[in-house]
Length: 448
Image (cartoon, rainbow, N blue to C red; front, side, top):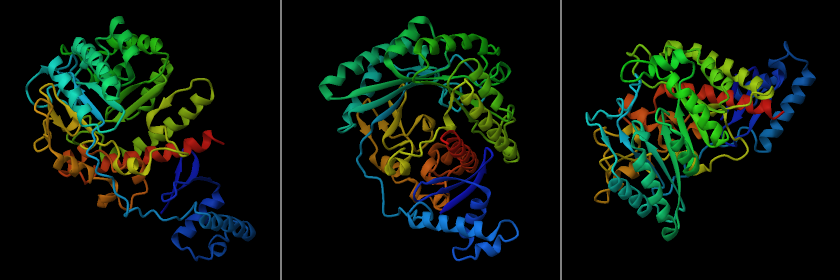
């Protein structure tokens, strides 16, 4: 399969089977489009009103040579490949707090309660059992990943400190190395907290939506006031202490700020270099939802952001935007491309009560409780269900050009909107495709 597209002012082609990405001029783009429609077409005749015959013949010869060399029109049938059933779990989202000091209006976790109507904190004892469980279920994996999550995990900072120390104590005897991360809204970031996070965390994710008016509208405190002024200076100081390494700011854009490129650039102008602003995932019945009718506006906004991104990086205001980062020379192995994030398979979430779920978004959903770290139970049938939910097994993905980049999308979104983890959420697919097109075009431009 060959996917032809236009993004950020460039004419591009992706060969799905080989992974080759081509930046094309107009004549090559039109010639390739003709060959895709009919491999035996008389392309010079078809394009005689647009280009000189000799130029078309030369271009077609070059394209056919690329096909012979295995860069274009290669097989993308990997139906004989399937993920290996190892039973190994290597990553855990450990919920330090089912409570939060913000009341974000789009919160999938119901402001930290996870729809359980029970605000709670992880205990040291349960946290230790969770780390023990991960070690016991990690097979020969050396590097293990643990993300302290919430609600707001820093509301339970003393327990996080104890659990990190406990994890370090396990490493030598079990030949493991814990890579700890924390996802936080930064409200509780004192100097002590910052120093600890910088010393112990391999990554830190800070939630900021962008411009003050945008952030405050969706991320108020319990008293209804905005939180931007409470966190922005803390986030700056933390990032400066961290040396701009191994962190990113993660925001959410909604139907209220479809001009989200301004939010990305606002954060870049403040000096933040690692940025991700993601679309809200919610029912279209909510006022702040991104609707199908908004897609042309959203697509244009990604184009606008792509052009600004190139300009900033070229002219001294360098930053990374998560969705524009794509590795076209290496990247994940085939197994990773098939299985994606690994939720429910190699990655699980654990609640303050010790319950195990496929990921943080599945917590509290009926039918997805996988076991408990307190009694060392784990439902391998559910794990196998998620393992078999790879991109080759999804009917909708079978003819999608982006399938080896998105890996079939988010299982939690699929289940929430379609009632089935194997049926991807359509809005997510469309936005991911557009971001990928921009990312590939940007890669081509920056590597010329």
